[in-house]
Image (cartoon, rainbow, N blue to C red; front, side):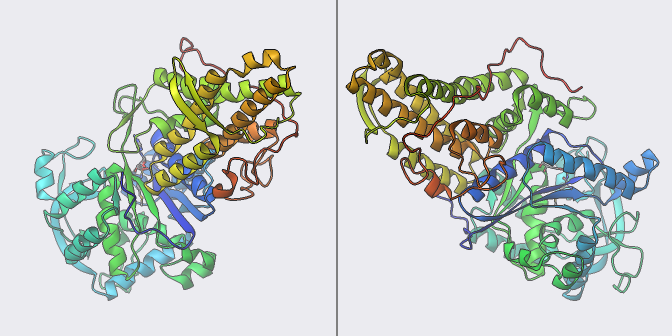
Length: 568
Ligand code: MSP
């Protein structure tokens, strides 16, 4: 693949966001997935030495929340408080290292949304008007006549679309058609994957209409200031309210209001965002409406909107009626049996990051867990640790500069290992994959280093050579093999740490080689950046002599005959 041509951020800063989640629902695999992907990206970028800001949060206004609260006999704010706490706890449970959790009912957000709205009224980008069209109540959005026809006048949730008309404020999205087209042309990677960008461009060709951006038929929203031409009684449309979160969290919409609401001033430098990570169903808002709103506000546009696809469960679409949502308690049951890092590995390597949906299936989970983690990563580390203990009393042996091997070994055939180069190439390839937001590719590359070590052990058979370890030449040979293995595994573990922070920290404790500021705390940050840490034999490499222990296996083999983990 060619390198990404999206504008890269030369500042050394990196800002990544997730959607803010609706509080009328409880967290499930979809929400956890997006946040985990963003977390892995954030951890990788920190490892690269970037100054990272990672934002997630909850979307708390709108008719859906108002209705859910009424059905439960509680106030919308009470429902929002309860479920926002659930979402926050969910994000902590999956190990997300977010820097802020924004809630759209917080004054720091509401004040700036009001400022943005009034700025747009003053610039003529928002005006009063009457509109009639097809309305999808569940999604809280109008659909075009063409779409309504295509969808056979059915909403996203299968209910009939409603004919609705309103006197409201409208955002003049229609005015931005040419500018958007031009913007897309100049930023060919603005929306990724490319197939999703084509969908957006295709829809843009149908033309853009004004978008209603206020509501009067319910009150659970941010009030449009009464001094506006529409007077009192309007609340800001939930999508405009929600999209602005990406900027209000940084205080860039109204610095004065943000400052008085406690937003630190130095956050402003993180705008524009490097990646808005979202699910494919909310792409239109992010790829069309959002850049147009930012253009109208005279603000820089984000560098990339990355829209992933959907998880389905055991081959079926997840739905409320089927009751087959992989919810948070189910994920927790997987994590308590196989570890949280194993769940994160499965989500990242098997998930729907690209154009196609992915199936969450128990059988597949066990297969991937055994193949990648128990039989490869864990087993390889354990074998190597074991041999260092057995043959060298746990002291890291001296390779005496022997880091290369040319081999001709049936059934493997001919080949060569050059461990310093293998490690350097893997680290470089991981960096390139990250530039394309190809996280699965980055992890696959890191994992391939472990498979190289496995193959090397298979070919060199140190356990056989060790039978004559009393002979100095054989001892040197085993020493070189094991040093090459342990040092390559150290590099591989660093490359894998963004997805498996707990297990890699555990390995580093056994092997006494933690690259963390505080070996006991996986959140304490790295002593150096990837380019320094990943150098085979470099400053952070294993030195000859220090003691290691093989420790417990990081992942125990799983038995697929066990019943699937289920929520308690
Ligand atoms: N509140 C809006 C987003 C506003 S962003 C300015 C919203 N919230 S949501 O609670 O419905 O969350 C939608 C997001 O959850 C999706 O975009 C996606 O990130 C995630 N997922 C929900 N279901 C999913 C799957 N089945 N699979 C993968 N992720 C999906 O829309």
